[in-house]
Image (tube, rainbow, N blue to C red; front, side):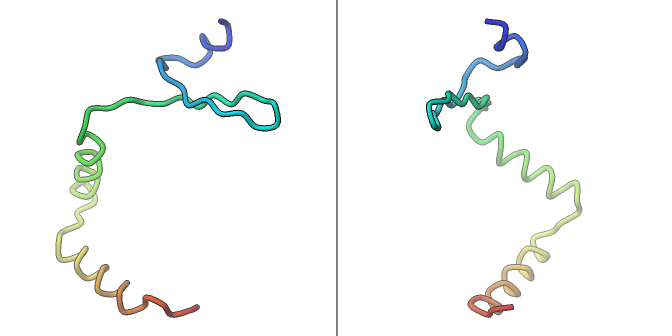
Length: 68
């Protein structure tokens, strides 16, 4: 199919319908844990340390339920 040739390196799709129209969304399949490894590397690259995360969590919990 010509339409599939225009979506390179995609083997799997999430297929839904809306109003009689087929919607295909490319799905990427990755090894278990690889997304977590990517997030951890991004955190490391940004120089974020555990103490920074602890502070952010504490601050967020203090403001929970408050309206702006």
